[in-house]
Every structure is written in C-alpha cells, then in structure tokens.
Image (cartoon, rainbow, N blue to C red; front, top):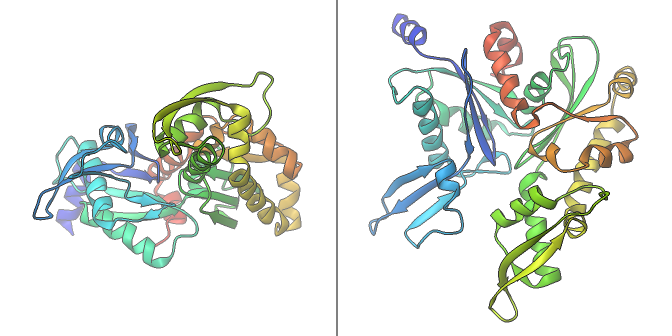
Amino acid sequence: MILDQLIGFFSSDMSIDLGTANTLVLVKGRGIIINEPSVVAVQRDKFGRQKILAVGHEAKEMVGKTPGDIEAIRPMRDGVIADFDMTEKMIRYFIEKAHKRKSFLRPRIIICVPYGLTQVERKAVRESAMSAGAREVFLIEEPMAAAIGAGLPVREPQGSLVVDIGGGTTEIGVVSLGGLVISKSIRTAGDKIDMSIVDYVKRKYNLLIGERTGEQIKIEVGSAVALDSELSMMVKGRDQVSGLLSRIELTSEDVREAMREPLKEIADALKDVLEVMPPDLAGDIVENGVVLTGGGALIRGIDKYLADIVKLPVFVADEPLLAVAKGTGKALEEIQLLQQLANE
C-alpha cells in the first residue's frame, strides 16, 4: 500500500481515449501528448512468433501495403476490443511513450468506453490497461466525457445533448446533474462511412479501392448537404472488370450519395433519443440545441443535415476530435468528478 502510494507520487496520472480510429493520451498537468492512429504492425516468423514493428502513425502507413509476413492490425473494431493481445501491447506502448520509457512508473488511468459496452468488454479494457502497467483503472462513458470536453454544463440541473461520431461508434447522450439520463450507442460511424464510399465506388465505377482511400475521399470531398461549389478529386484503384489500374474523377455529389445510408442511421438514432426525452429536459434541448463531437463532426454540413431532420439547432464543438480526451483530462484534474463519473 505504501509502495503503491510512493509509486503514485512519482508517476503521472493519464487518460486514454481508446478510439477505433485514433488513440489520444492526456497526462495530468501536461495536456494531450499523444494523438496517433490505433494501428499496430506486427511481423510473424515461420514459427508464428510475433514481433511489434510499429505502432501509431508509422503502422498506419503500412495498412494495405504489407508483404505476407507483416500485418497491420487495428485492434479496436466498432468501439470494442477485437484483439485483446494487440490492444494490451498498444496501450503499453503509449503508456511507456508518455512516461518516456520509464515503464516502472505505474500511472492511474482513465479510459473512455462506448456506452453500449458489455460487462465482458469492460473487463477486457480494464485488464488490458492493468496488464500494460496501470496502477488503477477507471472507465467512464464517452458521451459524458465528450459533453465535459465540449464545455457543456454537465453538473447543472439542465439537459445537454451531445452526439459523438467516432471511428467505430456514434454515442448519443443526454446529460444532466452529472449523469447520463438517456444514452444510445450505435456501431455506425466513421469506419462504416468509409466502407460505404468503398462499396459505392466499386458498385458504380467498378473500381476497387482500399479503406484508407475511402477515408481520404471522405475527408477531401465528403459532404452531408449540397455545397455552393461542389468538390472533386481523382481516385486511383484497380478496375475489377479489366483488372488494370485505373483512375476516375469522384465528386462530392457522388460521396454524398455514398454516405446517405450511414448518415441516415445516425440521424435515426438521434431521433430515437429525442422521442424518449422527458418533457422538462426536452425544453432545455430545444433551447440549447445539440452539440456534435468526434471526427464525424468534421464532415462538411453534417450540422445542417441533422438540424434539418430533427428541427433543432445543431452546433459543432470547438476541436471536436479532442473533446473526449479533454473531458477525461478535466476528470483527471478533479478527483471528485472522476469518482462521480467512473463506472467501477
């Protein structure tokens, strides 16, 4: 016990936004120090033994481009751990990087988890962090962390509605008096939008492209509503009819059509939450509107798209990509808030 307290004195508490697409690490007193893709590149020898080659940015560059003995793995899928061993290695890497390789210092860690995570999945997240060297692990739910990070008055007796569109899940939460009154988590988010673009290009243009290209298309020319000046980009891939390499010009109108179904699923989930809203909270939401966080909030016009459907004001938070990490950082700074929010 005394040793644990001594170790705690010298270590830095940290929070981890363990996302499907990106992992952000925030250290108490230092802010966000790591923001890297949630990708691990491993090399397997002929005996099946694994060697970690790269984690984060370097590993993502290898996705879709590796030889047979190297694999670029995304250990998080749809907001949950798909590969326990790789997740543990990834968390360990980020903890050691945050502590400048001094792995004997065991930090207290907050990890954000999707609202819909099962008890088994929560246990897997907790055990991954403990195995990776954490002294103590707290889990808090992403909608709450996103609301705190977006600067919403979570402790006040008024309703705030946040929609966090991440890589694997979209988290919708109504927050009041420091708790989640209503929450919904769907596994339709950035990854599914990327794949819908890949499928659309394959279906309409007979062109085979990778998931990374789908993401790049979404970022460069994607929009949820019609633009005053439509965008376009050249896309390269393999023609599935001739088998030859080819290129096409893809417009933002194409991408809007490709993204229609996943965006509708997100809008439908938001409507489901609004339909079960207690009347007193509904009045607050009509007045305060809906706040968007997460990478999906950066899709052009998604605020207007959702506002037109739910007939409410919709705003994009400042630095939406960092909202969840900032929220956990505030919880780190205030131990009472942390104890109130943590799901033990």
